[in-house]
Length: 448
Image 1 (tube, one colour):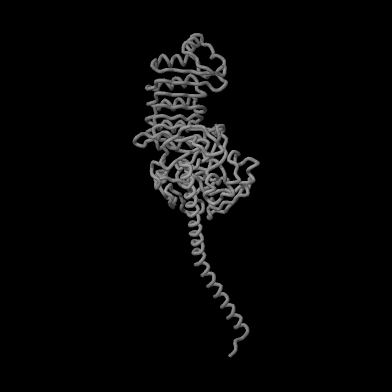
Image 2 (cartoon, helix red, strand yellow):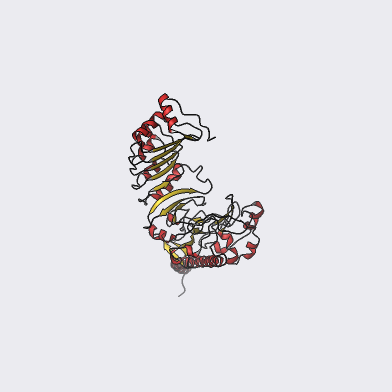
């Protein structure tokens, strides 16, 4: 018996619905598998990219006896080229490299077009969309370790005292990707893994791939303990300054003592350097600035970098070299072994000196651009172990405190050497003369 038209339409419709449901189920099951397969392929390709970079780095080292400099800078500290350009001949990019003028900065108008035309897939993580910015230069997705690649570095395999299988070379950059040719393409391992856009990590998957100095590539879970990751940073052995020739990478800076980079500006201009004792404890640290990059940073940023020092409770000497706020000074008071402290700027107020007087082991104190008054000297007098203190006036200004308060400090602590500078050194005899007459400090003479 033939089905009625209405029944026939209902049967066909039910069949279509059932078929669509089956297709939806198949897609729901297959899509994750397809995505996983695609991600696995991308991770494999990224791993191969890092292996190609490893081969290029070692071929470069075989030729030049060192890894390439992180960045080549001339004697005036002008940046020219980065390691990504220097290894180009070893990643089948010789035609590009042959067109590079090594004695001209990479971003010079006469050379920038050459970099704009370059597309080197080895420097691209396939899990991340390739892109350029206003300068139309390809962004690269990998960065170097700041303990191997840095300003005019010339790190050799023998410098990697932790061993090649325990030293990181190159890894996934988490964000803030820089242009190909950028002369500051290195990041601080001490920032840990996946903690900041300026460090190593990944925003597109739950692991980060890192190239080790032995040529192997490891995947690190983002749950990896920071201490475990940082332990693979390695240590260089030499740092001596010699002449430079930007037409060919030369040995300009090499580490000469057991130094550790604790933090680095992503542009590589500034960093916190630490010195280890025989037991690997950081006992000395200073903020190192290669080209005035602290200027304009302000205290909040410096405070955050000072916080990097918190774990190093055995610190005995610290040279900040720029401004900390009161919050930064509160970090300093946590170092029970601190004996030498050098500070400039905003925290050198009465309140700052009040906090400083809690550092009971301080023996030497160097304060620049001092902003404290008479109350500050009374606080500093509480430092029972203080052996010497140097105080500079703010640039172009006179001291806020009176000569009388300085004399009171010297009489209370006769064994403590006191040096005051206001453009030039003021003798202790002059200080006592001003205290007797209650006279003002002499005009600032700029040291002339």
